[in-house]
Amino acid sequence: MRHRRTLFAVALAALALIVVACAPNASQDTLKPAGPYAEIPHNLYVPVFFVATVIFVLVEGAVLLFSIRYRHRKGRDQIPPQIHGNTRLEIAWTILPAVILAGVAVPTVAGIFDLAKKPTPDVMRVNVLGHQWWWEFDYPAEKITTANDLVIPTGQPVYLSLCAVGGAYEGQPSPNSCQPGPPDGQPPASLGNSVIHSFWPPELAGTQDVVPGQTNHMYIQADHPGTYSGQCKEFCGLSHAYMRFRVVAMAPDDYATWVQEQQQPVASSAPQGAASAGLDTFRQICTACHAVNGLTDADGNEIPPSNNAPNLTHLMSRSCFAGCILEMNDENLRRWIEDPPAVKAGSWMPDYGLSEQQISDLIAYLNTLK
Ligand code: CUA
Image 1 (cartoon, rainbow, N blue to C red):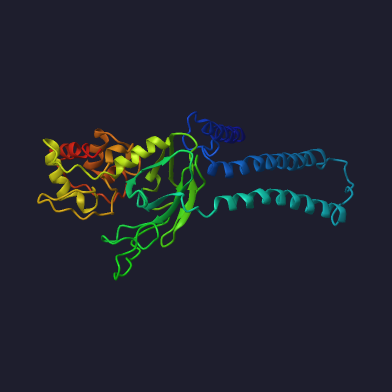
Image 2: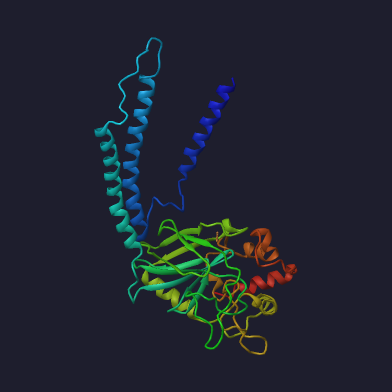
């Protein structure tokens, strides 16, 4: 009886394992590469998988066959011929795996070199900054700062420089090559409370660790327009599981339009109605951490931008927010502003105890950030 129950449990576990592999629209599928930098590891994975499968079946098959066919039986009292120390066999089963491994090593090393190529001077660059727990994307040439959605043009390689940043810079640029250094004559900022992350857009590339005090690099490229989801792949604290992002690949023309829109500072004319009240709250509270390019205080002085939290200049152009766990809509914005740590555990954005009215006004203002 107990034997049967164990067997049933094992069968159920095996079935569950097989069934979870059947998601029809799996959005993070390394088996569906959508660009050359995902194809390089995929083209290695497929042949190695089949070679490994053949070897597995042969070896395990032989083990099973021999242990059943030549098992001890009554009346078998002779020990079969022993092959220990047989020189020919020893040489054969040393050389054969060595040849197989050498065969795997050649394309592997070639792939590593392909992925680690130095960028050409005209390659498009994006700096990827890992915060707790969201991704910032800076476009140094285009002078764009965004978050959660990484927008790229299709059909061209994008060279990413990845850095970990913390919340303790106190307005100073972080000491890594993803951001400009401190102004002349000023000491470099402390490292802040940055932690390790790992950037992983499965359909576009493999993973790359993001390490405090170090700049790592990787290429991504999307062959076709579309949205490719990704996530942080290295445990980085409470909301590691909520540190997602989307790569939004656009046709080159659409991408050029997007760049132009993103380069615009916020409209200088003051918003009206509820949005106007929302702007007041935003100036008082939100600008301590969030930047809106070109935003001025009530007297018309520019508010110094802070990079502790996502730059919200064109918030409404993004598909998601809060580490990309929430779709961009009013309902979710309300849920988030009401109590951020309740949505994303450990969120550095606290619950400010705003009234329903203040939150509604704030959402009205955020909706003007197109
Ligand atoms: Cu960032 Cu896990």
